Image (cartoon, rainbow over all chains, first blue to last red; front, side, top):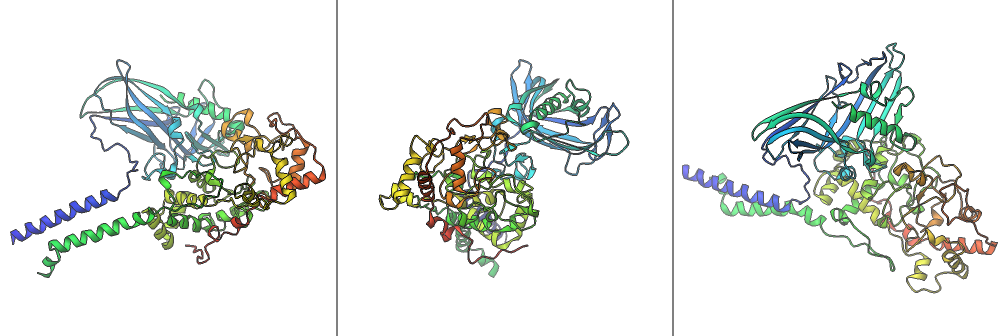
Length: 265
Length: 351
């Protein structure tokens, strides 16, 4: 009886093996899945906390700026790309080519957005560098070409401008209480992205050691108040309240992008 | 014992072979390539490596093209604005989408798009596959999130089956865009009287008036060929043809954000131009005679106006000849091609 079981097991293993060969033989070689299956030597995580001044960001909840006006953000989404760790000798180690962040898809609690990467070299690092938005090659991607629905650039992310065949780098839809009376009656829309904007030199200084089998988490934040109130070129949302980066909205989009990058701390 | 015999070595091998045949069947069938009927004098059209043409793919795209299932309220299909009998253009100056929403620009004719290097009047989209995405995004066209479009097709037994047969996978953004692009690549027009005269050696295919119009069209006096170049009557570039002194629609500049591109639009093919009116990016010019009169006038003088738009003199006979030549670009076999029309045996289902 035991012999028969073993014999049957052999058949089952044979069936499984041949089935695997069949599947592999018929599978197209255009799979564009990510490379996260590569065994990591170390784990790098970056947590991005959104805030408004000293208050934590909460989607769909009014938050007051230091000048007394208030904002209620209904949607905020963006890309980071070309995320690299900077070694003490200045050389850079890539940890993530593109990450999609959303604070707009049902995330009503305090927004904490995560990026994970697996640097292939151990060592001592002094900074993290990244780009906001997408480099030109990724920005030219066809969103319908990605097999995985979870890919950051997939059609279902709704971050692609079909008419321009490019991606939005940052998408923010909000309402403002410009009079400070508790009524969020002023719509603001900032849909921002352009190859000419892309800057991958944003540097966050942080010294840490990361070796095989270890993990390190970097805490960063984006302060929306720095875009509208405290920055070097603050945007007066009462007047400059709409851009899709086209035509007359190009300059406003570029200012928003610059301010957003500066707001990363 | 019977169960054990079922697992005998020969049965297992036979079963595995059956599985292999079934598993590979759809890919083998979809891999049977479809040969486009390329007209004489036309170059070999470029076909993307990852969307090779097969009949199954073209059939799927054809059915989707005519099916309003892809619009938010299931009232508008691709064919609502791209009518086969109008060389896949629209009779309206600006097309209407869901909720009777007025579009932004005149719908271009889908003629010989297989040769296109960019798409839409401003050329903002580099491939036919990506062009398919645009009406879904536009609230004046389909206004349907691609996620919901795919869900509808997944629930639709016919499309689910056709998608798996054509691409070896169920409906998704890839199969939706690829199949529609595959169908549009078959919309080749190259059998007009002009083609018969020029490429097929039929000297009597054009009338004397049409031949005089051809000479005018190709001559230095009018310089039409400066933009409407080559076998497809377009240089695939962007020009400001002097239609407006001030452009509410900035055209190519919407994509590039460059002032020097304001008022520039992609040069359209003139094939079947008799059928594709009204004309220009906004459909503001109603007839071929009015088009000729516009170019005759020398344009409105926008700062970006093409230097080729300098005005010219034509007598009435020359004007008739030129228009007759333009009408000789009508390919009746193209607009009557049943393979380009609504599948007769198909009735849309609204899940």
